[in-house]
Amino acid sequence: MARGRPRSFDKEAALRTAMELFWRRGYEGVSVAMLTEALGITPTSLYAAFGSKGELFDAAIELYETQGPSPTDRALLLAGARDAIEGLLRGNADAYTDARTPPGCMVALSAMNLGAGHEEVGGKLAERRKHDLSKIEARIERGIEEGDLPASLDASVAGAYVQTVLHGLSIQSRDGCSHDRAHAIVDVAMRGWDAMVGEAEKAEGIRH
Amino acid sequence: MARGRPRSFDKEAALRTAMELFWRRGYEGVSVAMLTEALGITPTSLYAAFGSKGELFDAAIELYETQGPSPTDRALLLAGARDAIEGLLRGNADAYTDARTPPGCMVALSAMNLGAGHEEVGGKLAERRKHDLSKIEARIERGIEEGDLPASLDASVAGAYVQTVLHGLSIQSRDGCSHDRAHAIVDVAMRGWDAMVGEAEKAEGIRH
DNA sequence: TTATTTATGTAGTGATCGCTACTAAAAGAT
DNA sequence: ATCTTTTAGTAGCGATCACTACATAAATAA
Image (cartoon, rainbow over all chains, first blue to last red; front, side, top):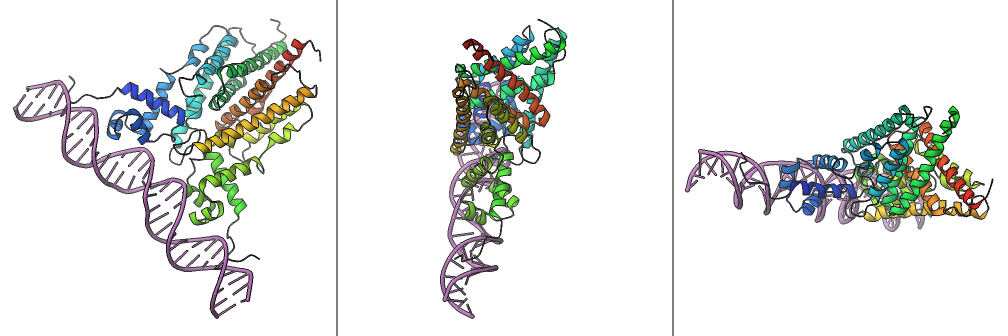
Protein backbone atom coordinates (compact mmCIF):
# COMPACT_ATOMS: atom_id res chain seq x y z
CA MET A 1 0.00 0.00 0.00
CA ALA A 2 2.49 2.58 1.19
CA ARG A 3 4.70 3.80 -1.60
CA GLY A 4 7.50 6.30 -1.70
CA ARG A 5 10.01 7.39 0.87
CA PRO A 6 8.70 7.25 4.44
CA ARG A 7 8.89 10.19 6.81
CA SER A 8 12.15 10.29 8.69
CA PHE A 9 10.89 12.06 11.83
CA ASP A 10 8.18 11.41 14.39
CA LYS A 11 5.31 13.67 13.43
CA GLU A 12 3.55 13.41 16.78
CA ALA A 13 6.71 14.20 18.71
CA ALA A 14 7.36 17.13 16.41
CA LEU A 15 3.85 18.42 16.98
CA ARG A 16 4.33 18.14 20.70
CA THR A 17 7.56 20.13 20.48
CA ALA A 18 5.84 22.74 18.34
CA MET A 19 3.00 22.96 20.86
CA GLU A 20 5.46 23.65 23.66
CA LEU A 21 7.08 26.38 21.63
CA PHE A 22 3.79 28.07 20.74
CA TRP A 23 2.59 27.61 24.30
CA ARG A 24 5.64 29.32 25.74
CA ARG A 25 6.19 32.07 23.18
CA GLY A 26 2.85 32.55 21.46
CA TYR A 27 1.91 32.32 17.82
CA GLU A 28 3.89 35.26 16.49
CA GLY A 29 6.67 34.71 18.98
CA VAL A 30 7.61 31.53 17.16
CA SER A 31 9.11 31.72 13.68
CA VAL A 32 9.28 28.92 11.16
CA ALA A 33 13.06 29.04 11.51
CA MET A 34 12.71 28.40 15.26
CA LEU A 35 10.37 25.53 14.55
CA THR A 36 12.60 23.84 11.99
CA GLU A 37 15.58 24.13 14.30
CA ALA A 38 13.72 22.83 17.35
CA LEU A 39 12.14 20.01 15.37
CA GLY A 40 15.39 19.19 13.58
CA ILE A 41 13.77 19.28 10.17
CA THR A 42 13.82 21.56 7.16
CA PRO A 43 11.09 23.97 6.12
CA THR A 44 10.14 21.66 3.26
CA SER A 45 9.43 18.79 5.62
CA LEU A 46 7.53 21.03 7.98
CA TYR A 47 5.27 22.31 5.24
CA ALA A 48 4.83 18.84 3.77
CA ALA A 49 3.80 17.45 7.14
CA PHE A 50 1.73 20.30 8.55
CA GLY A 51 0.71 22.55 5.67
CA SER A 52 1.56 25.96 7.06
CA LYS A 53 2.52 27.72 10.24
CA GLY A 54 -1.10 28.55 10.90
CA GLU A 55 -2.25 24.97 10.41
CA LEU A 56 0.57 23.75 12.62
CA PHE A 57 -0.57 26.16 15.30
CA ASP A 58 -4.14 24.91 14.91
CA ALA A 59 -2.91 21.36 15.31
CA ALA A 60 -0.88 22.38 18.35
CA ILE A 61 -3.94 23.96 19.95
CA GLU A 62 -5.91 20.83 19.17
CA LEU A 63 -3.22 18.72 20.80
CA TYR A 64 -3.14 21.09 23.76
CA GLU A 65 -6.84 20.72 24.34
CA THR A 66 -7.01 16.97 23.87
CA GLN A 67 -3.92 14.96 24.66
CA GLY A 68 -2.48 17.88 26.60
CA PRO A 69 -3.52 18.74 30.11
CA SER A 70 -7.30 18.91 30.15
CA PRO A 71 -8.16 19.10 33.84
CA THR A 72 -11.19 21.11 32.81
CA ASP A 73 -13.31 18.37 31.31
CA ARG A 74 -12.22 15.90 33.96
CA ALA A 75 -13.17 18.25 36.79
CA LEU A 76 -16.47 19.30 35.31
CA LEU A 77 -17.61 15.68 35.31
CA LEU A 78 -17.24 15.45 39.07
CA ALA A 79 -20.39 14.91 41.07
CA GLY A 80 -21.30 17.98 43.10
CA ALA A 81 -21.13 21.40 41.51
CA ARG A 82 -18.83 22.79 44.16
CA ASP A 83 -16.36 19.95 43.77
CA ALA A 84 -16.49 20.35 40.03
CA ILE A 85 -15.67 24.04 40.20
CA GLU A 86 -12.98 23.60 42.82
CA GLY A 87 -11.54 20.69 40.84
CA LEU A 88 -11.57 22.88 37.77
CA LEU A 89 -9.63 25.62 39.50
CA ARG A 90 -7.20 23.32 41.27
CA GLY A 91 -6.61 21.10 38.28
CA ASN A 92 -5.78 24.05 36.12
CA ALA A 93 -3.69 25.64 38.87
CA ASP A 94 -1.68 22.42 38.92
CA ALA A 95 -1.28 22.44 35.15
CA TYR A 96 -0.39 26.12 34.95
CA THR A 97 2.39 25.79 37.49
CA ASP A 98 3.65 22.40 36.33
CA ALA A 99 7.37 22.85 35.79
CA ARG A 100 7.38 20.22 33.05
CA THR A 101 5.23 22.37 30.78
CA PRO A 102 5.17 26.08 29.94
CA PRO A 103 3.42 28.22 32.55
CA GLY A 104 -0.17 29.34 32.15
CA CYS A 105 -2.86 28.41 29.68
CA MET A 106 -2.00 28.27 25.98
CA VAL A 107 -5.51 29.23 24.91
CA ALA A 108 -5.50 32.27 27.16
CA LEU A 109 -2.01 33.54 26.45
CA SER A 110 -0.58 32.41 23.13
CA ALA A 111 -2.40 34.82 20.84
CA MET A 112 -3.23 37.83 22.97
CA ASN A 113 -1.51 40.38 20.72
CA LEU A 114 -1.11 39.84 17.01
CA GLY A 115 0.16 41.77 14.05
CA ALA A 116 -1.90 42.79 11.06
CA GLY A 117 -3.10 39.88 8.98
CA HIS A 118 -3.14 37.37 11.81
CA GLU A 119 -6.31 38.45 13.57
CA GLU A 120 -8.12 35.24 12.74
CA VAL A 121 -5.65 33.25 14.86
CA GLY A 122 -6.64 35.30 17.88
CA GLY A 123 -10.27 35.01 16.94
CA LYS A 124 -10.12 31.24 16.97
CA LEU A 125 -8.67 31.23 20.48
CA ALA A 126 -11.28 33.73 21.63
CA GLU A 127 -13.89 31.30 20.33
CA ARG A 128 -12.27 28.53 22.34
CA ARG A 129 -12.35 30.66 25.47
CA LYS A 130 -16.01 31.38 24.84
CA HIS A 131 -16.61 27.66 24.41
CA ASP A 132 -14.78 26.91 27.64
CA LEU A 133 -16.92 29.47 29.42
CA SER A 134 -20.08 27.87 28.10
CA LYS A 135 -18.93 24.51 29.42
CA ILE A 136 -18.45 26.00 32.88
CA GLU A 137 -21.85 27.67 32.67
CA ALA A 138 -23.44 24.39 31.58
CA ARG A 139 -21.93 22.63 34.57
CA ILE A 140 -23.30 25.29 36.89
CA GLU A 141 -26.72 25.05 35.30
CA ARG A 142 -26.62 21.31 35.75
CA GLY A 143 -25.84 21.91 39.39
CA ILE A 144 -28.89 24.11 39.65
CA GLU A 145 -31.08 21.50 37.98
CA GLU A 146 -29.79 18.82 40.32
CA GLY A 147 -30.59 20.97 43.32
CA ASP A 148 -26.90 21.26 43.99
CA LEU A 149 -26.90 25.01 43.57
CA PRO A 150 -29.61 27.59 44.30
CA ALA A 151 -31.90 28.36 41.38
CA SER A 152 -31.40 32.09 41.78
CA LEU A 153 -27.70 31.77 41.12
CA ASP A 154 -26.67 33.59 37.94
CA ALA A 155 -24.82 30.85 36.08
CA SER A 156 -23.47 33.33 33.60
CA VAL A 157 -21.90 35.58 36.21
CA ALA A 158 -20.68 32.66 38.27
CA GLY A 159 -19.05 31.11 35.23
CA ALA A 160 -17.45 34.38 34.23
CA TYR A 161 -16.03 34.72 37.73
CA VAL A 162 -14.50 31.25 37.58
CA GLN A 163 -12.99 31.93 34.18
CA THR A 164 -11.67 35.27 35.38
CA VAL A 165 -9.81 33.52 38.18
CA LEU A 166 -8.48 30.95 35.70
CA HIS A 167 -7.18 33.58 33.31
CA GLY A 168 -5.69 35.54 36.16
CA LEU A 169 -3.94 32.41 37.36
CA SER A 170 -2.46 32.00 33.90
CA ILE A 171 -0.76 35.37 34.09
CA GLN A 172 0.29 34.78 37.68
CA SER A 173 1.91 31.55 36.51
CA ARG A 174 3.69 33.39 33.73
CA ASP A 175 5.06 35.71 36.37
CA GLY A 176 6.53 32.83 38.33
CA CYS A 177 3.73 32.05 40.76
CA SER A 178 4.39 28.77 42.59
CA HIS A 179 2.09 25.78 42.82
CA ASP A 180 1.29 26.49 46.45
CA ARG A 181 0.68 30.15 45.83
CA ALA A 182 -1.72 29.31 43.03
CA HIS A 183 -3.67 27.03 45.34
CA ALA A 184 -3.73 29.69 48.04
CA ILE A 185 -5.32 31.99 45.48
CA VAL A 186 -7.84 29.27 44.68
CA ASP A 187 -8.61 29.03 48.39
CA VAL A 188 -9.68 32.66 48.37
CA ALA A 189 -11.51 32.27 45.08
CA MET A 190 -13.52 29.38 46.49
CA ARG A 191 -14.48 31.47 49.48
CA GLY A 192 -15.91 33.92 46.95
CA TRP A 193 -17.78 31.08 45.30
CA ASP A 194 -19.19 29.85 48.59
CA ALA A 195 -20.25 33.33 49.62
CA MET A 196 -21.92 33.87 46.27
CA VAL A 197 -23.78 30.57 46.52
CA GLY A 198 -24.63 31.15 50.17
CA GLU A 199 -26.07 34.54 49.44
CA ALA A 200 -28.25 33.15 46.68
CA GLU A 201 -29.47 30.42 49.01
CA LYS A 202 -30.23 32.88 51.74
CA ALA A 203 -32.19 35.03 49.32
CA GLU A 204 -34.32 32.01 48.60
CA GLY A 205 -34.81 31.24 52.26
CA ILE A 206 -33.12 27.91 51.91
CA ARG A 207 -31.13 26.52 54.80
CA HIS A 208 -28.57 23.90 54.04
CA MET B 1 17.01 80.26 21.71
CA ALA B 2 15.13 77.85 19.52
CA ARG B 3 16.81 77.43 16.19
CA GLY B 4 16.12 75.23 13.22
CA ARG B 5 12.98 73.87 11.74
CA PRO B 6 10.32 73.14 14.37
CA ARG B 7 8.53 69.83 14.61
CA SER B 8 5.50 69.71 12.37
CA PHE B 9 3.47 67.22 14.44
CA ASP B 10 2.24 67.06 18.00
CA LYS B 11 4.59 64.72 19.80
CA GLU B 12 2.28 64.15 22.75
CA ALA B 13 -0.66 63.36 20.50
CA ALA B 14 1.52 61.02 18.49
CA LEU B 15 2.62 59.26 21.65
CA ARG B 16 -0.96 58.88 22.72
CA THR B 17 -1.85 57.35 19.36
CA ALA B 18 1.14 55.02 19.60
CA MET B 19 0.07 54.02 23.10
CA GLU B 20 -3.39 53.08 21.86
CA LEU B 21 -1.87 50.99 19.10
CA PHE B 22 0.49 49.15 21.43
CA TRP B 23 -2.27 48.77 23.97
CA ARG B 24 -4.63 47.19 21.48
CA ARG B 25 -2.19 45.06 19.46
CA GLY B 26 0.81 44.53 21.73
CA TYR B 27 4.45 45.34 21.19
CA GLU B 28 5.19 42.96 18.36
CA GLY B 29 1.72 43.34 16.92
CA VAL B 30 2.57 46.92 15.95
CA SER B 31 5.13 47.57 13.21
CA VAL B 32 6.97 50.81 12.58
CA ALA B 33 5.08 51.02 9.29
CA MET B 34 1.78 50.89 11.17
CA LEU B 35 3.02 53.56 13.54
CA THR B 36 4.18 55.94 10.82
CA GLU B 37 0.91 55.55 8.96
CA ALA B 38 -1.24 56.00 12.07
CA LEU B 39 0.82 58.97 13.23
CA GLY B 40 0.98 60.50 9.76
CA ILE B 41 4.73 60.88 9.88
CA THR B 42 7.73 59.26 8.23
CA PRO B 43 10.10 56.78 9.89
CA THR B 44 12.76 59.47 10.07
CA SER B 45 10.55 61.73 12.13
CA LEU B 46 9.52 58.89 14.38
CA TYR B 47 13.09 57.91 15.12
CA ALA B 48 14.16 61.53 15.58
CA ALA B 49 11.37 62.12 18.07
CA PHE B 50 11.32 58.83 19.97
CA GLY B 51 14.63 57.07 19.36
CA SER B 52 13.48 53.58 18.50
CA LYS B 53 10.43 51.35 18.54
CA GLY B 54 11.45 50.00 21.92
CA GLU B 55 11.89 53.46 23.42
CA LEU B 56 8.58 54.53 21.95
CA PHE B 57 6.96 51.52 23.60
CA ASP B 58 8.63 52.42 26.89
CA ALA B 59 7.30 55.96 26.58
CA ALA B 60 3.86 54.59 25.74
CA ILE B 61 3.91 52.40 28.85
CA GLU B 62 5.03 55.36 30.88
CA LEU B 63 2.18 57.43 29.49
CA TYR B 64 -0.22 54.56 30.13
CA GLU B 65 0.74 54.37 33.76
CA THR B 66 0.77 58.12 34.42
CA GLN B 67 -1.51 60.27 32.33
CA GLY B 68 -3.48 57.23 31.28
CA PRO B 69 -6.04 55.56 33.44
CA SER B 70 -4.47 54.99 36.81
CA PRO B 71 -7.38 54.00 39.01
CA THR B 72 -4.95 51.87 40.97
CA ASP B 73 -3.05 54.58 42.78
CA ARG B 74 -6.19 56.60 43.31
CA ALA B 75 -8.05 53.68 44.83
CA LEU B 76 -5.20 52.54 47.05
CA LEU B 77 -5.17 55.93 48.74
CA LEU B 78 -8.74 55.49 49.93
CA ALA B 79 -9.29 55.25 53.67
CA GLY B 80 -10.34 51.78 54.71
CA ALA B 81 -8.58 48.78 53.26
CA ARG B 82 -11.74 47.19 52.00
CA ASP B 83 -12.80 50.32 50.15
CA ALA B 84 -9.32 50.62 48.71
CA ILE B 85 -9.38 47.08 47.35
CA GLU B 86 -12.91 47.35 46.05
CA GLY B 87 -12.09 50.72 44.52
CA LEU B 88 -9.04 49.17 42.91
CA LEU B 89 -11.08 46.41 41.34
CA ARG B 90 -13.98 48.63 40.28
CA GLY B 91 -11.80 51.42 38.98
CA ASN B 92 -9.84 49.04 36.83
CA ALA B 93 -13.00 47.23 35.74
CA ASP B 94 -14.28 50.60 34.55
CA ALA B 95 -11.04 51.34 32.71
CA TYR B 96 -10.78 47.88 31.13
CA THR B 97 -14.28 48.06 29.69
CA ASP B 98 -14.17 51.74 28.73
CA ALA B 99 -15.20 51.83 25.07
CA ARG B 100 -13.05 54.91 24.47
CA THR B 101 -9.84 53.00 25.11
CA PRO B 102 -8.61 49.52 24.16
CA PRO B 103 -9.96 46.75 26.37
CA GLY B 104 -7.96 45.32 29.23
CA CYS B 105 -4.72 46.36 30.87
CA MET B 106 -1.79 47.28 28.66
CA VAL B 107 0.76 46.14 31.23
CA ALA B 108 -0.90 42.76 31.54
CA LEU B 109 -1.57 42.07 27.88
CA SER B 110 0.70 43.96 25.51
CA ALA B 111 3.82 41.82 25.82
CA MET B 112 2.61 38.37 26.83
CA ASN B 113 4.24 36.53 23.93
CA LEU B 114 7.33 37.79 22.21
CA GLY B 115 9.72 36.62 19.56
CA ALA B 116 13.40 35.92 20.05
CA GLY B 117 15.42 38.99 20.91
CA HIS B 118 12.57 40.92 22.48
CA GLU B 119 12.41 39.16 25.82
CA GLU B 120 13.52 42.25 27.71
CA VAL B 121 10.35 44.08 26.69
CA GLY B 122 8.28 41.39 28.37
CA GLY B 123 10.63 41.42 31.33
CA LYS B 124 10.06 45.11 31.90
CA LEU B 125 6.31 44.63 31.97
CA ALA B 126 6.67 41.66 34.30
CA GLU B 127 8.63 43.96 36.59
CA ARG B 128 5.80 46.49 36.44
CA ARG B 129 3.27 43.81 37.34
CA LYS B 130 5.45 42.79 40.25
CA HIS B 131 5.65 46.40 41.32
CA ASP B 132 1.88 46.77 41.09
CA LEU B 133 1.49 43.68 43.23
CA SER B 134 3.82 45.09 45.84
CA LYS B 135 1.73 48.26 45.95
CA ILE B 136 -1.39 46.22 46.61
CA GLU B 137 0.41 44.23 49.28
CA ALA B 138 1.66 47.41 50.88
CA ARG B 139 -1.87 48.76 51.05
CA ILE B 140 -3.06 45.57 52.68
CA GLU B 141 -0.23 45.68 55.19
CA ARG B 142 -1.12 49.25 55.96
CA GLY B 143 -4.65 48.08 56.59
CA ILE B 144 -3.34 45.52 59.03
CA GLU B 145 -1.24 48.12 60.82
CA GLU B 146 -4.20 50.46 61.09
CA GLY B 147 -6.31 47.70 62.60
CA ASP B 148 -8.42 47.74 59.48
CA LEU B 149 -7.59 44.15 58.62
CA PRO B 150 -6.79 41.17 60.86
CA ALA B 151 -3.12 40.69 61.63
CA SER B 152 -3.23 37.03 60.64
CA LEU B 153 -4.23 37.91 57.10
CA ASP B 154 -1.59 36.87 54.60
CA ALA B 155 -1.03 40.12 52.70
CA SER B 156 0.94 38.32 50.04
CA VAL B 157 -1.79 35.83 49.23
CA ALA B 158 -4.50 38.46 49.51
CA GLY B 159 -2.63 40.73 47.12
CA ALA B 160 -2.02 37.92 44.67
CA TYR B 161 -5.72 37.11 44.71
CA VAL B 162 -6.64 40.68 43.93
CA GLN B 163 -4.13 40.86 41.09
CA THR B 164 -5.37 37.53 39.77
CA VAL B 165 -8.87 38.94 39.51
CA LEU B 166 -7.49 42.07 37.82
CA HIS B 167 -5.57 40.10 35.22
CA GLY B 168 -8.52 37.83 34.65
CA LEU B 169 -10.72 40.88 34.11
CA SER B 170 -8.26 42.11 31.49
CA ILE B 171 -8.74 38.98 29.41
CA GLN B 172 -12.49 39.01 29.98
CA SER B 173 -12.50 42.57 28.67
CA ARG B 174 -10.51 41.51 25.62
CA ASP B 175 -13.18 38.93 24.99
CA GLY B 176 -15.90 41.54 24.98
CA CYS B 177 -17.01 41.53 28.61
CA SER B 178 -19.35 44.45 29.34
CA HIS B 179 -18.94 47.05 32.07
CA ASP B 180 -21.80 45.59 34.07
CA ARG B 181 -20.55 42.05 33.70
CA ALA B 182 -17.13 43.11 34.93
CA HIS B 183 -18.67 44.67 38.01
CA ALA B 184 -20.76 41.56 38.64
CA ILE B 185 -17.50 39.61 38.62
CA VAL B 186 -16.05 42.11 41.09
CA ASP B 187 -19.10 41.55 43.28
CA VAL B 188 -18.20 37.89 43.58
CA ALA B 189 -14.52 38.66 44.00
CA MET B 190 -15.29 40.96 46.89
CA ARG B 191 -17.31 38.24 48.55
CA GLY B 192 -14.16 36.16 48.39
CA TRP B 193 -12.23 39.02 49.94
CA ASP B 194 -14.75 39.44 52.74
CA ALA B 195 -14.81 35.72 53.46
CA MET B 196 -11.02 35.63 53.53
CA VAL B 197 -10.87 38.56 55.93
CA GLY B 198 -13.72 37.22 58.01
CA GLU B 199 -12.07 33.87 58.41
CA ALA B 200 -8.83 35.48 59.53
CA GLU B 201 -10.74 37.57 62.05
CA LYS B 202 -12.61 34.57 63.37
CA ALA B 203 -9.36 32.67 63.78
CA GLU B 204 -8.16 35.52 65.97
CA GLY B 205 -11.33 35.52 68.00
CA ILE B 206 -12.14 39.03 66.92
CA ARG B 207 -15.76 40.02 66.48
CA HIS B 208 -16.53 43.00 64.31
C1' DT C 1 16.50 -3.85 -12.58
C1' DT C 2 13.47 -0.02 -13.74
C1' DA C 3 9.74 2.96 -12.83
C1' DT C 4 7.07 5.40 -9.61
C1' DT C 5 6.18 7.83 -5.52
C1' DT C 6 7.06 10.46 -1.61
C1' DA C 7 10.18 12.96 1.51
C1' DT C 8 14.19 15.61 1.98
C1' DG C 9 17.85 19.38 1.68
C1' DT C 10 19.49 23.43 -0.83
C1' DA C 11 18.72 27.62 -2.07
C1' DG C 12 16.14 31.42 -2.70
C1' DT C 13 11.31 33.76 -3.47
C1' DG C 14 8.90 38.44 -2.57
C1' DA C 15 7.44 40.82 1.47
C1' DT C 16 8.14 42.93 5.63
C1' DC C 17 10.90 43.70 9.74
C1' DG C 18 13.33 47.73 12.39
C1' DC C 19 16.21 51.19 11.13
C1' DT C 20 19.17 54.82 8.66
C1' DA C 21 22.18 57.38 5.04
C1' DC C 22 21.26 61.11 2.31
C1' DT C 23 19.12 65.15 0.66
C1' DA C 24 15.73 68.71 0.72
C1' DA C 25 13.00 71.92 3.20
C1' DA C 26 11.89 75.26 6.67
C1' DA C 27 12.68 77.78 10.43
C1' DG C 28 15.78 81.35 13.43
C1' DA C 29 20.12 84.16 13.74
C1' DT C 30 22.91 87.54 11.65
C1' DA D 1 19.95 88.44 1.77
C1' DT D 2 23.16 84.29 3.85
C1' DC D 3 24.39 80.99 7.27
C1' DT D 4 23.24 77.70 10.58
C1' DT D 5 20.39 74.39 12.69
C1' DT D 6 16.86 71.12 13.07
C1' DT D 7 13.27 68.54 10.97
C1' DA D 8 11.17 65.90 7.14
C1' DG D 9 10.93 62.97 3.02
C1' DT D 10 13.05 59.51 -0.25
C1' DA D 11 15.00 55.57 -0.84
C1' DG D 12 17.00 51.67 0.65
C1' DC D 13 19.96 49.12 4.18
C1' DG D 14 20.72 44.08 6.01
C1' DA D 15 18.00 40.79 8.41
C1' DT D 16 14.22 38.07 8.97
C1' DC D 17 9.47 36.82 7.85
C1' DA D 18 6.52 32.77 5.94
C1' DC D 19 6.94 30.01 2.21
C1' DT D 20 8.41 27.26 -2.13
C1' DA D 21 10.72 25.69 -6.78
C1' DC D 22 13.92 22.43 -7.76
C1' DA D 23 16.75 18.62 -7.69
C1' DT D 24 18.09 14.61 -5.02
C1' DA D 25 17.50 10.66 -2.05
C1' DA D 26 15.08 6.71 -0.46
C1' DA D 27 11.52 3.85 -0.25
C1' DT D 28 7.89 0.51 -2.73
C1' DA D 29 5.86 -1.64 -7.05
C1' DA D 30 6.53 -3.74 -11.18
